[in-house]
Length: 361
Image (cartoon, rainbow, N blue to C red; front, side, top):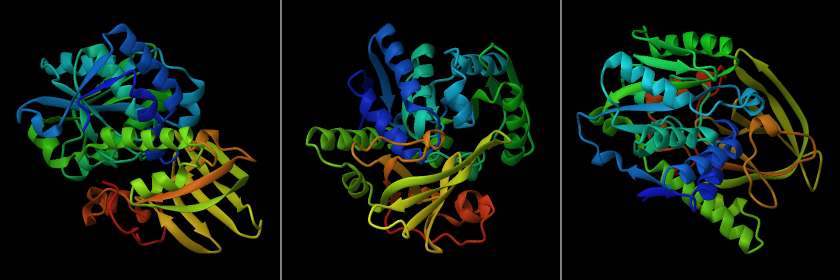
């Protein structure tokens, strides 16, 4: 397991987080540049803690970015939004945060919290609340397992901040925060939820930062050996290579703070054999010939065929040669309580979840 993050680790972590992001979570490229810059400015080492090493009464917070990936790529961050939101919440509580938690390990949202941890002089914990990326705030194991959603804070690129001292539910937090995020220009920093070490230990998906690094290292090793990485990544994560082909159509629009749409991929051997993927920031459902092949919360992720680079939903375009990976979700996302929040029906699909064999971790 990771004890620290250094400049030698960031490329692998960025690749692995992009793959775990299932199309969402924001740009790993931009956030890796920011992480590398902060590491160079602040000694080159970010301490990483195991969840079980936190004191039970330590105050910790999950952090990340909120908004549509299409917006976050076009609207650059000022650089300290997450740290500003954390300091705002500390001032409101008159208490200090002991460690930073990655809200979602998928995409750039795995890297932004590490930037903030360096700016705040805090360690980051090896784990997160999703084991992937999800589009809505209530979709993490912290709040699924009963951690209170409030108080929470948002901040934008102009230094504007907002605190919600109280909220009725995690779903209501999503509704209110999403509207405010849109008013903040379509992207904002989020600090949520706040919890004690004992609550974190009971609800976190452990060691996902270490997993992201291992996935990225697998991709880099395949590149060095001039091998296509997709099958090796699938094997590492107990998943499978679902499809290979060329993107022939993309329908994408930004609606209500989300990037929504679908894409069509045609197989190389026959354009009659196609895969359709629906997405809402993240890839949700994969179908072929009317058959559902994989559904959320299992991970559906696209990588470039030749070098295994993850492809976000904001970067989908005609002509890309891709491999589609189907990876099993962490066991924490497959309980009845979790499926009520992150299963296909939670996204409006009249489908029961049919899990892939095994677990991601």
